[in-house]
Length: 399
Ligand code: ADP
Image (cartoon, rainbow, N blue to C red; front, side, top):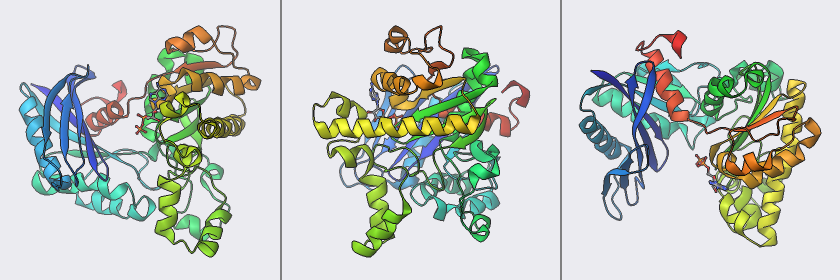
């Protein structure tokens, strides 16, 4: 009987899932999908890797299924799909592992309590990430669970990259630059050698450009710097998040607009970024297709900030061998990649327009000193691999 691993990514209003089945040393995706609208109008869909709908259910307006009801439905559906394989474990995406969790970990009650201490560091994500872990520990204590963290990859950053220039006591309390999107960066680091051995052994900047967006500098596959900081609102402007912001602006909003923490949180997480600047949409496709000057400004600002961060990250590495684009915008938008690379010409990168239009993977010209790539990320597979390894289902050396 082959092993199956379920990967869960639970948010405030949805749970995304993937089901992998072991095939020798590899893991094959069998099914993926989500339950969304957990507290409004729940809808479940499961699809084959090719996108064919395999199961679907709606609960109707106003039904409050919650994480508990959603999980029950998911587990029942997935067990039904498991003919011929055995559910060996569940891997969870957990946004925050603090300073303590530099690697994925098998969860028990003590671990989940320790992870609960990071809720104040990521109040919009951490409680929802932990909800299904707690529920499964209660309901199915025999089912092994593993937590994989978005922060772990960045723990190899040198201390100067992790510290704010604040008094020492705040650092000791955990106020530092954690960095996020680590599972995506780790996946890219794990496959880079297949594409470019020099980049895998050398200095690479990866651009994870999705609804959330960040950039990460890697030296020989290990993280050395990231644009995200204490929270996932720092760094680049995103769909609705502002990115790096002078803290003086926050003080001004408190003093002059009488805004409290919750009101400022809403402004900088949900009303800013591409949406805030354009006043039109948080969706890059919509902005690129729009003729409105405000849409153009939002895209220009996004690119300007990428250009500056790229210089900063290249400086942190002392030079550059490769640039990798990934996530929704990075994988799909030839126009954004072209403009980022035109801005980066001074670093020694030269675009191959035809390869870029085709979607890569290599998008730099053969004469380019710095290579450039578009590589699909796969955070779910990364979590499934970790889960299998942590549970001792597979030799670590073959990861
Ligand atoms: P998330 O961070 O939620 O996982 P994704 O990685 O799926 O998000 O990225 C979503 C973003 O990718 C959206 O802004 C969407 O407009 C953008 N995107 C997807 N396809 C394209 C495309 N062909 N051109 C430009 N942007 C795209």
